[in-house]
Every structure is written in structure tokens, then in C-alpha cells.
Length: 526
Image (cartoon, one colour):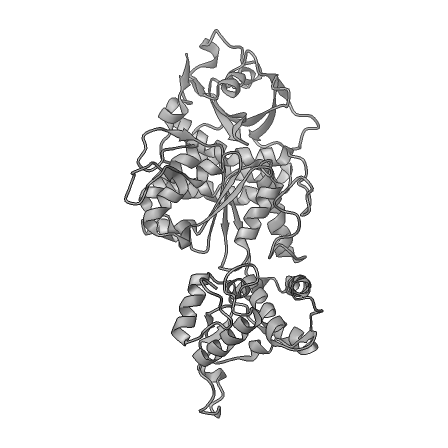
């Protein structure tokens, strides 16, 4: 007997162990570069995940929508076939799943008189289960399992199969996608040149970009991890620019900058009168990004109640505005980023495991700058070229500047590198920059825009003059010089806040604390 199963009614949370196994599988698949490596990974991983596995396959729709092309996953293939087997969409179980987008279970192939199963029954397969594979906002294929035992495939396994299909689908869609365009892709209106931090030739950098290109083509959820300042936002913008959604909006949301009580309204919008101060209806970021990409930076800052609502958007594309009862839909891709260990947060009960699983379809880790020494000079040169155009004078590093650059630990990563080079361009004379600020070895030293750099006590000269300026005095003098360079302007493209990579409010707070007054301040806000 054939039974149709609704995706929503069949969905359930996977056990923690199964979830971890699927997360691990997603990481391994994201590192695969070709079909052979994908099949090898799956032949090892799938037997432990599937309750029925005598025959396992994934079938992808061909462009005409009339045929499905089959990749056999289990039993493993000894050699890759020159041509893949195909079946028609019409008149087949898998075709019905592909067209209806609804899972289907067959208890006994031989007793079903409505559908001819052909090669499946010839292999001794008696029961089957098939679920749709979704990517690019639509059904792109079908994931199938079969058993030689009658009734071995049943409705209770549908949720597990859907979870596995969510991981497998993007890998196969990426294999069939055309090669992604280079950085300066003419079709992308948002990424016209390498973004900050996406410059380099090191093996770690190349591996990261290869995975990012595949993720972009597959249009799946991506979780970017890495230390602060490594370029996670730049990578997210580039993935969007490479993706089929590149003509749509890229909407970034930096959750760490928002009060926790405002995050839900920021993401999903609110109705008039939903809370004190909600004088008008407001669209949320997911609504504004329909057809494009939402980038959630520091996703770990999301409150648990909002995580439940976010999970629904990721799974079903549905949400309600705060204070509203009308369900809205959005066709939006989600890219998230964090510098925290979300797995540890999940163990502590601070982050939902089911949401983590949905986010980490393709995990991308951006290595810190200290692990990209081969890229350091390339990045520095690119920043100096940009600063040369900005300040209208030639800038380059002296031999001592290059030496300091190579020996510094770069705890602030690429953001610190840009800040150090910008500071040297402002404070040092001549075209040859020595980066003398990197010699400051005092505790709480001024490095990378108010970021303190810890120094071991043994590194401080015990004979140092007692009248040596304090770190706050260094900071005050530096602020005075920067404000002099900007003629007292704090905000705007040529303001001190932009130069220091700070929020204007943060800069004003530091100025007030240190007793610094901006010169030539005009009436009103500077």
C-alpha cells in the first residue's frame, strides 16, 4: 500500500548523536571537490545513519523536468559509470515525490499495482521510502532508500531521511553547478573586487575559497566561524555575490550591536502598537531580503525564544511580525557567523541543537591571520595600495616595517592589520613606513583601535623611565593627532571614527573619558 506523508507532520527532532553525525557529515562533504570523493564519504557514513540501506540513491531532476538522473550511494560503486541511469518523472514513485514535494513510503513493492518499480524489484527490493531534496528554494531531486524486507521502510523514518537529504542535496547540486565566477564577477553588483580579507594565495585560503564557491552555487545555509577580525562578513558578501541570488539584496544584521529585546523586531518586523514605541508597522530584515541573502553576524547572541522563531524561518520560510497574527513567507538565504563555539553553547543549553544543525549545512572556518603567514605580505600590499589612493601619497613598508609585520602575532587579525597600517599612514612621515607602533610592548598597549594587547611582564624593561607615559596618555595623544588629521570631524567617510574603525558613540565616550576635545568643531554634531 502506498502512503503519502506530509513533511510538516512527519518532522521531528533527531537524537543528539544522530545530529552530531550529520553535522560531521556536512563538514566532510563541504571539503569534497569531486563526485568520487563525495561517494567515498557517503559509503562510509550512510550505513550508520540509515535503518534501511540495501539500496540507497539520490535522483536529481534534469533541466527539462521530465527525467531524473540517479546517483547510487549504497551499495558502493566499484567504478564511476560513464553515464548515469535515468527514469521518467511521470508514472514513477520518485517522480511523484519530485513533482508533489511530499515524501512517500511503499510497504511492499510487489503488492503495489499502481506503479511499476522496474530495476528496484529486480534487485529484490521489497519496501522503499523516498523524500524530496530541496535547494535553491525548490525541489531539485529525491533521496531514496530501499530494503529487501517487507515493511522495513516506514513512515517513522521519514524525518531522519529528510534530515539526511538536507545535507546530501547541496553537495550534489554543487557538483552539477557550473563553475563559480572569479572575484570580479560582472553579474554581481555587490562584489566588484576582492573584499577585505579575501586576498591571498596560501593553501588554507585556497581551500576556504573552494568550499565557499561550492556553497554559493548550492544556495544553502552557511555557518562561518572564526576569530574576531578574520573577515567573516567579507566572506559572506562574497558568497552572496557568487550565488544565484547575487542580484537580490544582501542584508547584514550584527546581532551583538542590538539589545536582546530588540532582536526579534529587527529580524521579523513588528506591527503598530506591538510594544512601547512601536508607532508604525515595520518590516523586518527577512522581509526586506526576500529573494536575497540575510547575514546574521554573531548568531550566538540570539535569545533562545528568538532562536525558535529563527528555526521556523530556516525550515519553512515562515514567520509573523511581533504583535501580528498573519503568517508571512520569505524566500531568503541565510548565512550566519560566530566567533564562539556554538557546540559548547548547545551543551550548556544556551543554543538550540536543532537550529545549529540547520545552520551548519555547510560550515566554513576562516583561519586566523597568524596561520596565514603566506598571505600577510599580499594583504599588507593591498591595504597600502588602498591607503595610497585614500591619502593621495605613495605608501610602502620599509625593511624594518616588513620585519615588524612578520614577527607580530596579530591577535586582532586582518582588522588589526588594516588599523596598524592606517595608523602608520597618518602618524609616520615619508613614504616608507616603519610600523613603530608595533614596538610598544607595555601592558594594555594601544593596538587595533582601543583593543588591548597583553604582554608578559618579562617583556617590559625594568629600567624603563618612571616618567614613561601611561597607556591612557598614549591613547589621548593618539586621539588628538587623529582628530587633528580629520580637522575635528568624527562621523562620515573622512571622520575619525571611520579611520579608527569605531562607532562614533564609542569614540565620543573615549574622548570624554580622556578629556579630549575635537578641534575646529562645527555647531551641532561633529
